[in-house]
Length: 260
Image 1: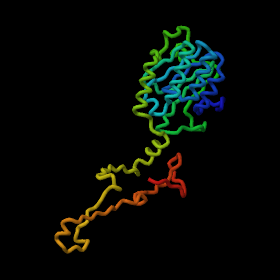
Image 2: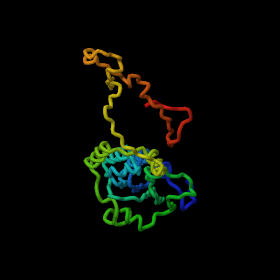
Image 3: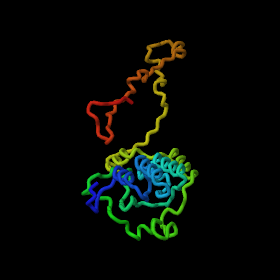
């Protein structure tokens, strides 16, 4: 991060750096957070008792969209409980704000389900203000002279039951693999989804009855008593299909296949 730029780019690495350098106070507002940022905030909670505020949208959909993950939520909740402080909730918050001492970072959190994010300053997603925190922002965050009474976000305390509810919902309906979901979104017009119905799916156990006339029996007595069958799928290799492997970006790997 270039500290001389007002319009800049922020990712988890930048957030961790700013939080880790704070010596007076930390205010963090975002839809969610990932483990690295949660670890940095947990360290700040221990280092600056009573001077760290964290406000999140504690909702499973936040994790599914890729604004944060379950590990980050669990980590910061545990750190707050151990320090005797609180984790706060604001439903639907979709803006990011970090106040670390007298540095203010206002940024657009990246939903990994939609895009991977950028680390290039010429593609900014944040505004960085050094030297002082605007009084209006301080007041709205409850950091001004009127304290908590003037705060406009994060009025609800997050209890353990709320965290457990998110964990259970994510267990029932987990997030997609974000790299694959982004590929699917880009190439959606080229993807075809086919619904298949398999009858007699135990193909190796399937037998076909052969007409007795194929055996050349001319005696009616024998024709009524002889039965012949054929197993068309007895060879397992006959049912094996090689599929080209893909890398993490969904690109085919040369000369690499797996069998299905």
